[in-house]
Image (cartoon, rainbow, N blue to C red; front, side):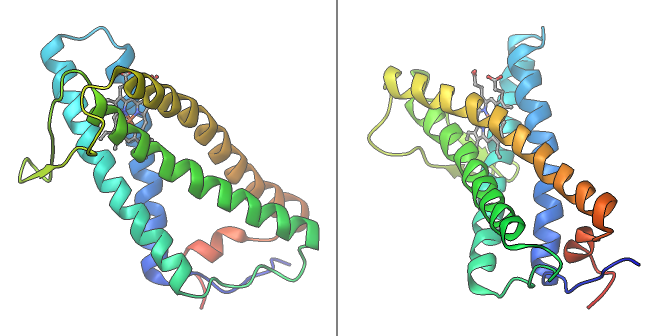
Amino acid sequence: MTISMQRYNSFSIVLHWCIALALLFMFASGLYMVNADISKADQYRLFQIHKASGVVVLWALILRIGTRILTKAPALPDSLNQQQVFKAKLGHLFLYAALVTMPLSGWLMVSASPFGLPTFVFFDWIKWPHIPGVARNKTIEVLANNVHWITATILATSIVGHISAVIWHKKTHNINLISRMWWNNK
Ligand code: HEM
């Protein structure tokens, strides 16, 4: 028998899956623009797309975390023991921390860059400001760059852990955790 359960509100569900999709794009574009053998002009264009999308992801994360704090999350299934509940909550907290660190470190990096290039969001309509007080600061740029790729590695590992936990609960105890993040039930 599959154990079903309550789900998150629709806004949280939409945000969760939009952010998940956006992360795929952020990882792919980030790794490609840094490592691929492409022209400087293409690299510049990709950097702009990556930065602009990252700012949108930051806003989506703020909305997601705000909604998570202000609304009640559905209770975890009773069949989970205390240790599993603790691990799940700690894991989610860790995921949120890594998620927020990614755009913030990217933003810090470009704000401190010696090039001082602007970031435009929403098809160049909005000029996204740089973080004040760090302009052309090489030390901060290098630090933020390291935080950005180290956190990318940690985040990718955590996402694999997050997905593995969902599969493990389904396989071992037939607990369908995905239904907490979809519209199959109430
Ligand atoms: C959730 C959001 C984000 C994700 C998942 C992400 C992911 C990545 C990844 C995987 C890389 C390649 C790292 C490497 O191999 O060195 C990268 C590079 C980069 N990202 Fe992001 N990023 C995000 C947000 C941002 C934001 C908001 C900005 C700036 C406004 C930004 C600016 C950059 C820059 C400038 C690089 C190139 C670093 C270099 O030159 O080595 N990123 N990003």
